[in-house]
Length: 121
Image (cartoon, rainbow, N blue to C red; front, side, top):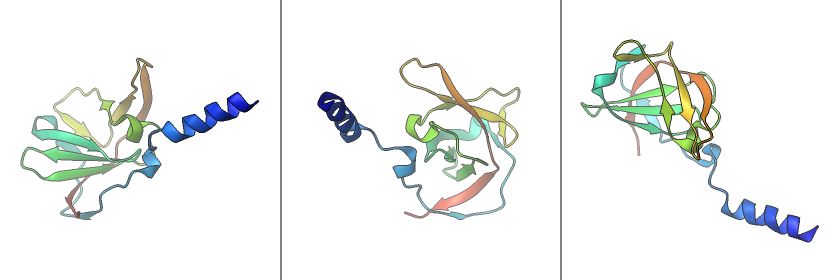
């Protein structure tokens, strides 16, 4: 019985921070939300949690997408894929969490609107 308890305790010590433990940088709205972003204008993305993704645009503006509900594993993996038929990613589209270790695709989750924000650090 003791070896099992030791293994569980050791696993708890080395476990990575969960998405709930991360702090999403506070942001102030900087204009009206939009339904779509032009993918050719996206410089990079920053997954902040299971529910928040910041899209950094080529012009350095940040568009925050708060998903309608939490997407399990997104904050931990910090990677996602999408498939679109145009050069736009829209609030009606979905993303798929990319799982590490060859576990295959993760949950598929809907996006919200893209809110221009100023990150307050």
